[in-house]
Image (cartoon, rainbow, N blue to C red):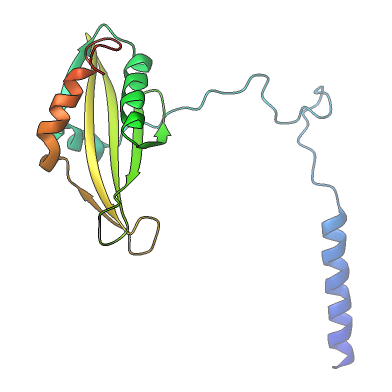
Length: 171
């Protein structure tokens, strides 16, 4: 090793060590107490991203039912109770969407079934739509998603009508 290389290595090591040991710049505003930097006074409610235009178009062809006189939360709670009683698990939930996942045991390759329910507010209540997907090799580079909503539309229509009735009578 040359003397210049040793000198450069020592300088680089010193710079890196000094950068690691320094304090990050303060984000405290003038007049704001220390320790309160960048912390909101109340936790912000997570905002739900709007539906993409393509998803709205796909929901127009999905089985849909108008539900009147029920809150979005009670509808989603009924859906969750029904689907979890059928062995599915909740993958994601928000104020107007819920998605379930279940493994398909008898498939030759690793496969999952996914069902996504979406509530769209309308003048008299909510439009409840559902889409069904079959996912082969989930979570891998070979993952393949197929929309099978059309194949199970008759069963989905029967299920969706149940949610227009309030609590318990459809279970």
